[in-house]
Amino acid sequence: MDYVKQLVLKSGYVDADIINTPEGEKNLKVAVACLAGIVALAIYLAAGSASPPKKVLESPEVTLSTTEPHAMLPTITDWHRMRLVDKTALSHNTNLYVFEIPRPAGHVKGVHPEPVLGLPIGQHISVSAEIDGKNIVRSYTPTTLDGEDPGRFHLLVKAYEKGNISRYLSLLTVGQDVKIKGPKGKFTYTRDLADHLLMIAGGTGITPMYQIIKASLADDKDTTQIRLVYANVNEDDILLRKELDDLQAQSNGRFQVYYVLNNAPTGWTGGQGFITRDMIERYMPDGGVAARGKVLMCGPPPMMGAMKGHLEGIGYPKANTISKLEDQVFLF
Image (cartoon, rainbow, N blue to C red; front, side, top):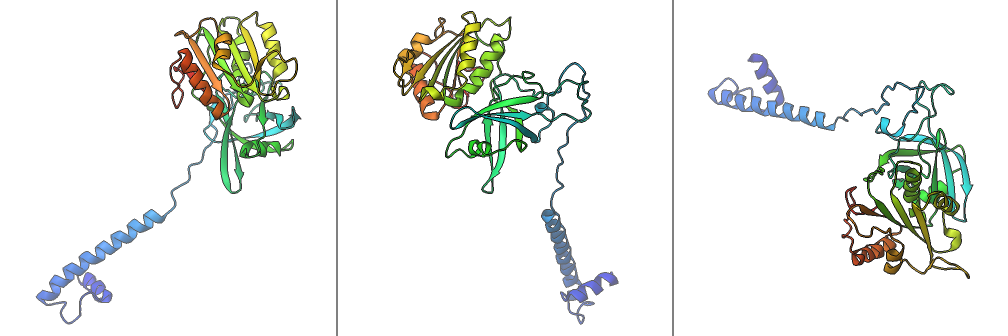
């Protein structure tokens, strides 16, 4: 107790002349309580100001197979750095980018298969970059399927004047890295998902459709009927046209594409102007608005808003603000 009295005297809370009196004893107890509170508050504030330990995201240990390729994206939650190995201009504002998928630790070239993204059909990846001091993220769908170009994947991206990531990609040179994460998305395609698919796309909105079409037609057990209505401004803007025409020719009638142009050239036999309700009704699958049919859409927001109205007029249910796999009308 004498030690406590000495501390209290040093603090100045109780005068030395009265500390041994009844009044001093009372003040002593109050002083001790105050000092204890101050100490507790100091400990609390110190703990609150300390930086929490940083969580380190590490790649889990993997056992590499000599027959099955390692899927990179689902293995960790952090971003991957992937290197640009080829870049081809397809038009004045559209490039095809080829990225190398990093090999996991322990990978031996020629022994282990080249890694793949591990991206479910119909899902996409996120691309991140720091632009003007801000971290910007945008989503893109590769045009290649897993294993189609071993150890690599392709992105088809149109650069817009006000597009942050699309302009960032357009300025990349071969050898530079980008940060990529995935898989992302609510849609996953399987052969038994629907009896028929009506696809409506505009511009680069063709990429998720193209991925799904390729996967469906490559599956001998898939009987899904697919119809694509694809809109662009000019004929030169039609992306993957040769690939789509080849897929149509090889599909035995399972897949048909109908092109629509705002500025149609002389002799154009496809649709002209904007996609109308009549165009959709003429080129949609024979099954019509059936429970086993789905509509998939991807394109500029104003176009998508108009398409929702056309579909409701035909009899399709109203599209949800955020699409789910079970929805009959799905907007990527």
